[in-house]
Length: 422
Image 1 (cartoon, rainbow, N blue to C red):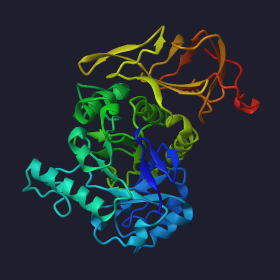
Image 2: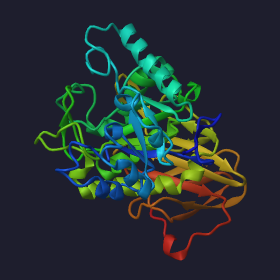
Image 3: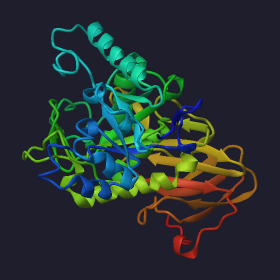
Image 4: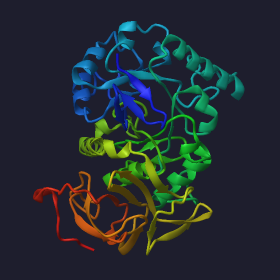
């Protein structure tokens, strides 16, 4: 049995290792595995992710999926459809992460397992809470995940790990028309995350809060217009934007399964293996940064929580969604004498020669950029220096810069770019 622990700081430990979870929805899907690709192939293609959730709800034992997950060291979850009848052997699997409560419950969303249309909102909540309690009664050793797009403070009672999903990359003719366009996507993500889902800073929740981001290979209709596939630059910026907001885990929706794209085929990343490969690279990057991401946060800054330990000589501003917004987010972490600083440029426009001031740093210290990017201002292996807390850098549009400051460990020559392009 996997030992899955929620730590007092709301990070996760799996078998004693502090872990920043990165997962992919719908790696397998009983209804699609026979017409897309075999489950074993899908699992092997997604081994960069800690686990899969979603379509593993159904028939894990009957389809032989448990052995596939165990052989390939991918964790999986189960949902309400199999809660009562799940054999103990599955719960005891070293790859079983936990349970998934009803997804985005509301009256009429799921007439069979969820909330019938005859339910009131309160009756729906009571039902979902009862499902959570049934999970915990059956198995107190694994966490229950709960996802909703709104009102996380309400739904926090119905899970041990709470997530919200929001997909901001849209055409300009849906519900967002007149409110924001694609180039405002990062600002829109913050706005709707705060006003619909969070309504308070993540650190003030009593449960871990994770973000579910989009992973589509083609446009889909979601009732409010088209959601468009993210570019590599967009999904990387969105990922680290969520991290600067304080999330403790990241999921991507989805590899294969519902919903269908506008051409009737699965809209998941299975349909674009080049884009899928980038998501896998991003998962490897986050895995490589794991021990940094689970460090205590010294300071962080996003639209609805302004940090003070990092300042910028130049910023870009835009007035969108009833608010004037600036382009830089950051999160700052510390390990001994080494400082880690992640900065996200939320603007699609680049900005040059920005002097950054990081409080608490004295003298001359080396800086190395981390990650797996090989091009652009956010590429890994650049070497700079900071003097008395200040250094200058330039940012491409949607750039993510991951700085390691003060480490005594030099980068290898093949990983370093000693010519800094401003």
